[in-house]
Amino acid sequence: MKAGSLVLATTVGMLCGSRVSSLAPSRPPIVTLVRVPHDGIQPEVAVDARGVLHLLYFAGEPHAGNLFYVRSTDFGATFSNPVRVNSESGSAIATGTIRGGQLAVGRDGTVHVAWNGSDTATPRGILNPAMGRPGAPFLYTRSNADFTAFEPQRSLTRRSYGVDGGGSIAADGRGSVYAAWHALAAGGANGEDHRLVWMTSSQDEGTTFTEEEPVWNEATGVCSCCALRLLVAPSKTLYLLYRSATATTHRDIYVLESRDRGRSFRGSLVQPWTIAACPMSSMSVASSGSRVLGAWETAGQVYFGEIDADAARIPRPIAAPGDAGTRKHPRLATNSKGDVLFVWTEGTAWARGGSLAWRLFDPLGKPTVIQGTNPGVPMWSFAAPIARPDGSFVVLY
Image (cartoon, rainbow, N blue to C red):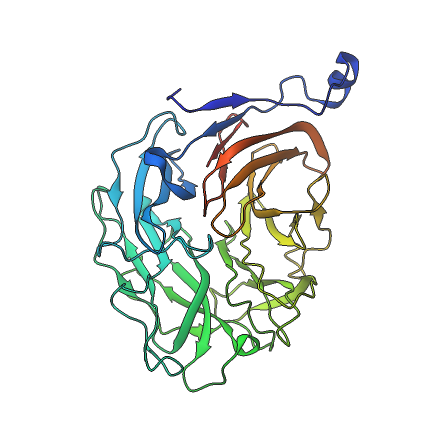
């Protein structure tokens, strides 16, 4: 194991031996912590069908830095040399934690990356009438065949402006790529309660993209400085989690679902939250087999739940054990046995790092005795868990 990695299989409190054996499996999954290479932050990770781990991370000045890509064939014990993703130096942003790069792996392992452009990034977005100049773009690029370079970055925004919060990208491995973000409609009304979730798609592995379209006709608004998350399940169904801004104070979580490659979505309210401020939150969606799970934050507590695909809803939110407080940036990973590793940060805030926390849940959603914490989450960062074929987990932070 490389320097800086830590292997843990922690349990609750000072339990006696008989109780531990009755609650824990005979061979509990091991949780391995791995620091992002080169002191990077904001890890985004995916594992392809061949077992190759693809990692995207941010480095540099938070307001104008760079995204880097590395690969690992041993689940984080070693990494390839980093490749800069953004073609224009300083065109990525980490400030606020939720505007950084997103990663998806497509056909033949092609790596697709999307991110919110910095204030100096080009090409710019379309004209922002409130500012009187072009706004920040939502940028996209993809890797070459041998993963040694990325194409020149391009903007995906054509009829939406005021890009904020964090967008997302997903790929189905069959040539379809989807990118989603939230922004205002050109020529439309201003304000958070008029923001829309937009999506564009490609059916040729990112060579061309359609003009973006609003994904839903419900007037929920979108929390301007919160990230959304998009996923393509093995069934080809698209899932999307986002936070609303209805009447500017209803910062509720919604789940959306599309079974026709994004042409139409249906959705439902997952969890309400009335707050007259932007919580700057992020969320996660993960799948394993036929199961799809989402995770989010509400009022300082983090939750996850399985998505009911028959009704586009999450009927049973599960809170992380313990008191709510400063819990943020929940992430999920599920293994082939159905175990769920739930990971989040504690104590992080604007320009302040914190601690990593995790808890393992069984396939029925019950917390097991496997849990832990670890200090050292850098400012503007979070964690990214993945499952190994043997059922163990790796958490990059």
